[in-house]
Amino acid sequence: MSLNGRTVAVFALGGTIATTASPATGGVVPALSGKELLGGVPQLSALGVTLRIHDFRRVASASLTLSDLDALHAAIAAELDAETVDGVVVVQGTDTIEETAFHLDLLHQGDTPVVFTGAMRNPTLPGPDEPANLYAAVIAAAGPWLRDAGCVVVLGDEVHAARTVQKSHTLDTSAFTSPGAGPLGLVADRKVRLHQRLPHRTVLPGNTEAQTNARTVRVALHTVTVGDDGTVLDLPDGRCEGLVVAALGGGHVPE
Ligand code: DAS
Image (cartoon, rainbow, N blue to C red; front, top):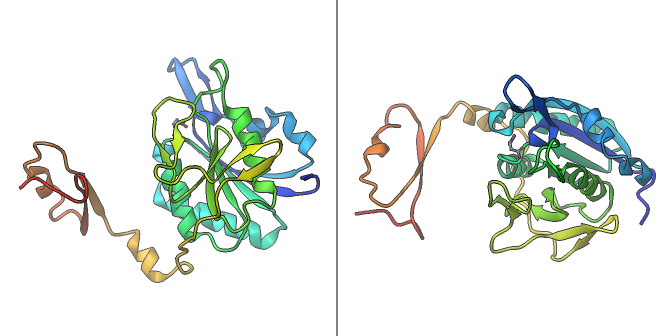
C-alpha cells in the first residue's frame, strides 16, 4: 500500500536517539532537534508522508515527569483536533518508553495510532539503530494497520502493545519484548504485518479533577528481596500517601 499523501505528527523528546558527542563530558548528550533527527533518514522522503515535527522536550528519558507526560497527551490531543493526521510518532529515550507509552495508552482517546520509538545505540556508534527505528515508526503510524491499537512501541522492526512491552535488556538492540504475549507484529516491506489481533484497551475518562489531584499524591514503591526484614518499609511512613509492594512470586513476602 502506498503511504503517499499521509500525514504523521512527530513529537521529539530527546533520549539516546537524539544525542551527539559531548567533548566536555566525553559522553553524549541529547542535542538533535526533531528536524535534524528525521533529516538524517533520507529514505523517509521517498515514502511521500508529510511530517509535522514538534520539538517537545530534549532530555534523557529518566528526567521526564508525569507533568511532561500529561502535557504530551494534551499536545497530541490538540494536534489531532486541529489537523488531519493519520498517526503520531513519539521519539524518546528507551529507559522509560514502557512507562510513557503505557501512561499515554491509558489517556489517549480515539483510533489514531501513537507509535513510540527510540534507539539503543547512540548515533556516534557503528550501526546505530536510529534511522531504521524512525523509518519503521513513521510507516507504522502512517498506515491503516494500527488504527484502534492505541499506543505501541516500535523498535527493531517489532511492534509491541504499550500494555505488554518491557525494556528487558540494558544494551541489546533487541531489548524490547512482550513477555507472555509476544509482539503484535512486524514492520517489513513498508507495511505492518500483524501477528495477533489488537488487544483490548482500557482508556480512562477524560482529564478529571480526580486525575489532577492524583498528581499531588506521593506513592512509594518497595521491591521485596531475599533477606528483606521490612525496615525499609518504615521509610515512606508519614511521607507518602500510599505504598506499592512489589512482592516475590505471586505476592509472597518473608514472614
Ligand atoms: N539515554 C537513555 C534515555 O534517555 C537511554 C536511551 O535513550 O536508550 O532513556
